[in-house]
Image 1: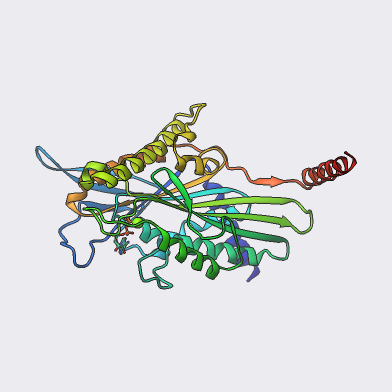
Image 2: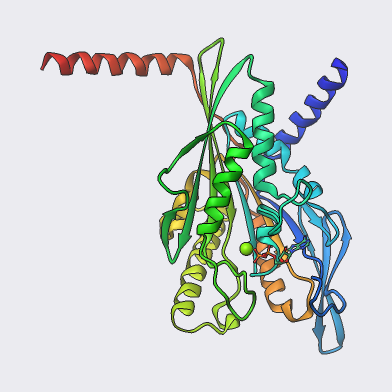
Amino acid sequence: GYQKVLEENRKLYNQVQDLKGNIRVYCRIRPFLPGQPSGSSIVEVIDEKTLTVLTPSKHGKGKKSFTFNRVFGPSANQEEVFSDTQPLIRSVLDGYNVCIFAYGQTGSGKTHTMTGPRELTKESIGVNYRALSDLFLISEQRKDSISYDVSVQMIEIYNEQSGVNVPSANLVPVTSTTEVLNLMNIGMKNRVVGSTAMNDRSSRSHSCLTVHVQGRDLSSGSVLRGCMHLVDLAGSERADKTEAVGERLKEAQHINRSLSALGDVISSLAQKNSHVPYRNSKLTQLLQDSLGGQAKTLMFIHISPEPNALGETISTLKFAERVSTVELGAARANKESVDVRELKEQIASLKAALMRKE
Ligand code: ADP
Ligand code: MG
């Protein structure tokens, strides 16, 4: 029993250490959907890390190969897709900043990965819920040594304006996954969903669930803070593909602008530029603390199997290749030693005393 727990902990520890290095990129291929014409897939899974895309060329068919940290084929279920993400959740509780993205064209499965299908079951529920559920489970396991406060915030960025999705409160303290699920349901209902030529459930906004964690070590009194952004990005397709006009075109342009700002941030991180243009969009401003630097970042890339998605599939995969070259600094925990905390408290009480004197 005990030996097994130790062994398990060591394994997890090693996995967490592995999270240093580049932004991790996992690619998920959506299955053909029931009720839609199913032909043969243009994407083939070669192994756990490699896929090929069939591309038409002058001399018959060509193949283009892509490699990522993981490739999940169309039959991968929600549990498998989440399983490699678990070490990241643990590190949020250790005081790291974590950012998990879903990227891809509309209809490729982003919301499926992050939230799940419309009718949620225990099996079909997505990364957001699983992440929080793990978070509460681990914090419960640690409750004799660390006391954790968890709060969540749902933010939607639409036309470069951010709005808060949960009514009446910004940052909501939560104590269970059920509470979060209720908040998420409210948030989802408020999300702007409209129809485009590509998918009637198309989401034209970036939707971000942020989890703030504060842990206090019960013996030393030191405090650590971790933060996790779970981001379901707007569709990455180019405006001309969606036959958008008027309001829809304006939205598409805003979406493209913030996604290209994200691309620019990622490029300049990749090139190790001293100036990273975080301030060019609401999205990158929001994620500044959790992109690059000391954060741990994971991007779930989504692609569709249909031949008519070829153009978008290739551009998504090229974006993903670029993302996977970004080297992150060794992640660092946001830990405040007891000394610093005590000093801060002393300063605060001295200030208060001075105020009283004036
Ligand atoms: P996006 O958020 O990228 O626009 P969705 O997540 O809404 O795409 O997926 C489009 C449709 O495909 C939905 O009906 C969804 O339930 C279904 N779908 C997506 N990924 C999968 C999957 N891995 N397995 C089964 N159905 C999926
Ligand atoms: Mg969606």
